[in-house]
Amino acid sequence: MVIYMDSLVLAMRLVLAGVFATAGVAKLLDLTGSRRALEDFGVPGRLARPGGVLLPLFEIAIAAAMLFPSSARWGAFAAAGLLGAFIVVIANALAHGRAPDCHCFGQLHSEPAGWSTLARNGVLIALAGTVTAIGPGPAVPDWIAERSSLELAILAAAL
Image (cartoon, rainbow, N blue to C red; front, top):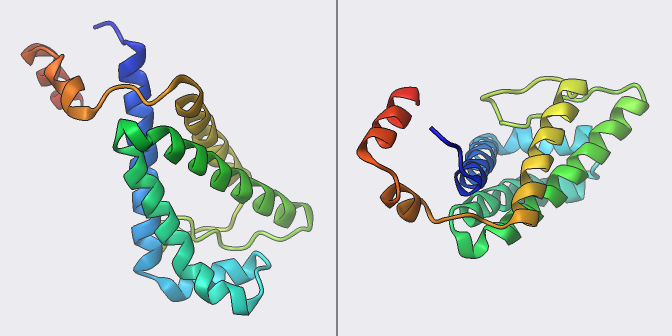
């Protein structure tokens, strides 16, 4: 099966949407942990409280934007900016010998921030940058309509 650029960009959008939706919802379900993680990374307490709510809401908004071609480029741009900020904050903590709990995915997955966290964010920022540069690709229903039954069956089996 030939992989088309539109299919690749759509896959990137869906991966980003899934990651940001999971991170945002998981953080909303653990607001205390989200606030504490912000404080551990140096955000003052008076800003960490609203930030613990605003950050996951922003992540969910990014995820929603990634689902639609009309907003995907802006969503990818916002994702790249947020991931870039995460990289700067994590790298700063590591440079000062600290490895706070990243709380990246709430209680679903939480571990001390480290080089693997930076690498994961680097991969995600590359995906977001690609969507921003190339464009959003097709809408999901349009992409499905262009596939044969065999292609969709193979994709379903692979998933």
